[in-house]
Length: 226
Image 1 (cartoon, one colour):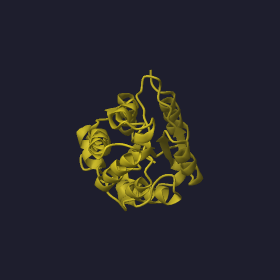
Image 2 (tube, rainbow, N blue to C red):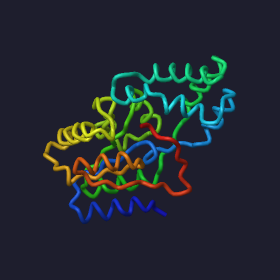
Image 3 (tube, one colour):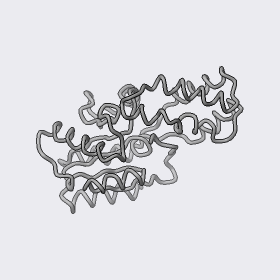
Image 4 (cartoon, rainbow, N blue to C red):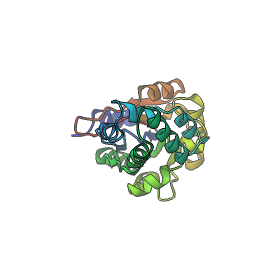
């Protein structure tokens, strides 16, 4: 069965004269197994929640997704935080490497829905609070059919220099969309599909339509990038 949010998205495209569908990446198009965090906590011998706090909760991540930091330094700082939480340094580094090497899974229902919308004439792009490693991660997942082999349809905040839910991120994303399409696109003709309520609110505040994605119980979703 398709996600309810995909049905809502399809209906909105039909009724609101939507020109562009913009999908989030993490928690929508690609999903992760949340049990990994417990595995990393056990691996490092730290308290429950230490690994997710050290990695996705590290304040440096805000810099990385705005293009002011690198994935490599983020991993180094995350390992240092795990050491501060009580892990041995070698185990902390191994845990961060284990997390970084973990492959996500593509939600094929979302992929199919996005490609169907594109085939029907709606422009489809991906907007992610991403890092400098996103291009290689998408290549590993073979998502060229969605983002384009040249990543023409990828809006990575690490490249844009602003991240969701900042208004500037949506403004820069819209300018990039217009460059890609070669036409002006009013905000009311764009819809965002995202699993973050904060991002949904940010998009709506900028005049976009927005649909909150709630994966079904079969989807393996984990903590997202900010």
